[in-house]
Length: 196
Image 1 (spheres, one colour):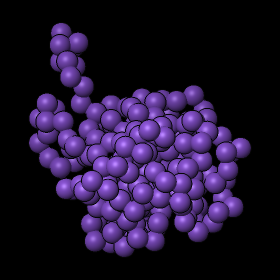
Image 2 (cartoon, one colour; image 1 turned 135 degrees about the vertical axis):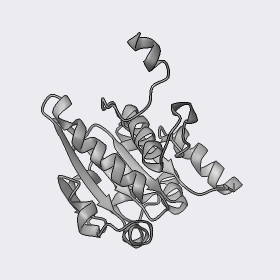
Image 3 (cartoon, one colour; image 1 turned 60 degrees about the vertical axis):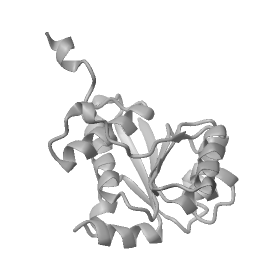
């Protein structure tokens, strides 16, 4: 079984987080043994969810197999001895980025990301704030130098998206690519040529 950690922090981007979680759930049959998703949601993320969608927190949590309280430093993702196949923080607020980049975490989401870097497992940070200051850029560089993939949610218009959901699907598919999860969400350049 493939095991992944998804962290959701308090930044704009909840529809992308939902699309990512649904993509992981839909990918389960394609992977030997399936997929198990461990979710950590910050308190601020719950507030942003209410602003950006009609989903209740319970609806979001239902998309994961296991939900960990962000205040529980004893949860499995806080330990390097607990194996998993990668972590995505989506969306990743600038304060969460700073905590991860400098190892100064104050909740389970930060700690799990820190452990993911320490154990040299894939960590993808979907940073959200624009424009970015020099502080934000330095923090992104520090996190990248520590081994994280910095992946702002910038759409690829070569896919010619016809809706916001098309953009979300493509971005979620690219995130799944980063952690090695096969998917049909991302539009692929040259797909039509491959089919001819």
